[in-house]
Length: 310
Figure: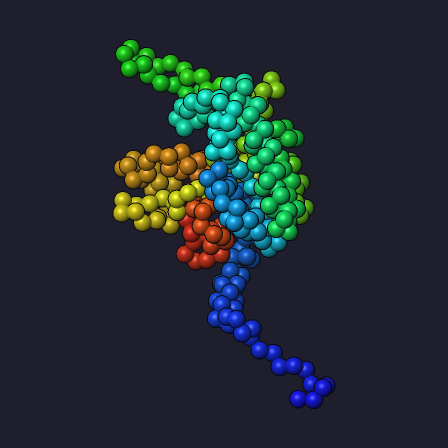
């Protein structure tokens, strides 16, 4: 070879097979990239899924990738375990009703501080470090999420009379103004939202993150609502993941006891979202590396997809 001849190209010596696998994966993903370009995905990022720094960094990179390929991701995060740890350190006792933390005037200040402050800004930093441009919000910003006091009832075992249980400043969203999110969708900014709402009298309400994410997804007409949790999805009686369910099938699985416990409120949020125009909701394991990308860009998916009908 003379000095004027270009060098011969060869595959890197480390792992050529790995390069071929990556190329094949990208080739399989291309049709899905085209399909979802311009769509909005709402991702509920749960408190337990946030526990591993490496997974958190991978999650941030995946969200940035979605934005780069033309999808509009909106991240809604929880933070129950982090709130609980701070309350313990401050020696403030927590009680729960139906899985909801009773939130008095003292506790709501701590909840807002943890959710809108520490956790929200951590996720914003992860996304920015991954090459994206994130902005931290709560439902109070721009009057985005209006909420009212959530109530629960219980029957007295002796008198059989129903009584109203006071959850304090726990709220449920009743109106979502998507203006800020619609504006951000036209930019390169990724919104990261804490599940805090505002009442008609200026009260601050702590809102269940699943419920909050479902309300956001419905308001923006999302193509997907992704619910990241610590299980692989809805399981059948043998422990196998069910990959694709209609709303009618989900209701049947609740009725026969296949779906039970803490999974019920999650699938009910999914059902509510698809009933209000979200194309599909997906429950998947946020502790699996790149679970969102696997769900979106592979034929077999990675979770349980729930849609309105066949």
